[in-house]
Image (cartoon, rainbow, N blue to C red; front, side, top):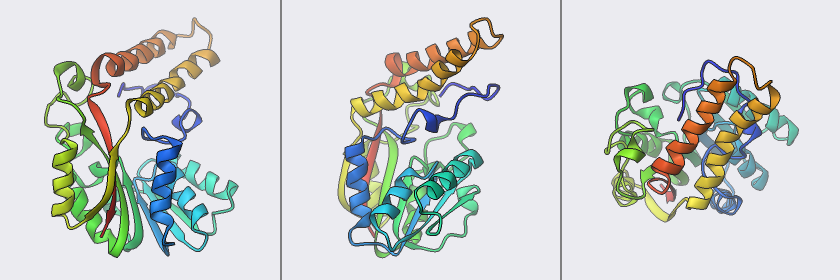
Length: 257
């Protein structure tokens, strides 16, 4: 993704419901999988602003949940949403690196787009360590419990235009079939799995870019940073539409421990 650390852009949660390419229909399926039979404890590693965890708690009114994320702003948003939805008495959110979390195992666990918690630092631009993530998650899922595991994969053969905006390497991700093999090797049963559609990706990427649009709408066209924001919008659009669209995928697995 384009680096915009020098700017105070609107938060992503104002433009996106989910910090992943996922439709409401698919999210509902994942919530149903985690909620029936009703869990006692729900753990979300890399929870972002906690949308999926909060929906599971709404669907399973006896469950308690914990979300962990390294971004304090996302955790603040998650707590605010828990309060708004009357779930704060059943949901806790911790702002800390996931690898430092002393989390007790749960019978329902979520990890979507957060395998990097157990791998090399993202800034090292190394391949995603799915195996380390799955082994760690296996220890967090109680026997017979359920895991929703979502992670980036190559949905088509990577090419230079697709890899350049990412880590620049063909081995950054696995194929869905190779990931499924690692999941089974980690001791999980695959109940079902599916890939995010291009339409889901289009909605996600449009929402991701929307914060640039919203910044430009809120500032004078001659603002010193306006040119930079316009470039960031265009760089992100080109990276996706002319690069990794249809190549970078997102696989969602419903697993049983």
